[in-house]
Image 1 (cartoon, helix red, strand yellow):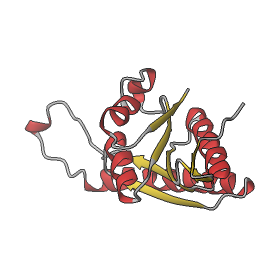
Image 2 (cartoon, rainbow, N blue to C red; image 1 turned 135 degrees about the horizontal axis):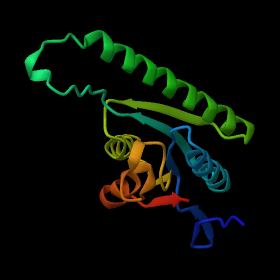
Image 3 (cartoon, rainbow, N blue to C red; image 1 turned 180 degrees about the horizontal axis):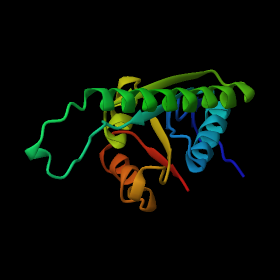
Length: 164
């Protein structure tokens, strides 16, 4: 069951949330969170922005201090692959929102840790709510709410709706 969140003031209805950001990464849980964000935006007539964050590419090579390796092309290929993946995630989100009659703004935030990218994007678009899954596909951190979702909860200046 879905409950509409509104404030009643002076006999009129004012939406509590008018600008929602939803963090997505293509995982099943982020799609579930995005579905909630679409429903909420639809009920409230709110603007919806889907963002996906790709973290900086790093290469760890034991003993690297003893040799010089040009990693430029490797990092460029990693960044290109991440950008293509982000593009696909955002295209899928646009299709899902469009099917629900919601106009969606999308944003890819490259080269930042996920929580930092989510929070900075929410600030940049003046969001009044962040929606995200309790975990996504971020390696071992996906096993714990203690990673990105907890970071967003701890540092965001606006309410955060965590979907599990």
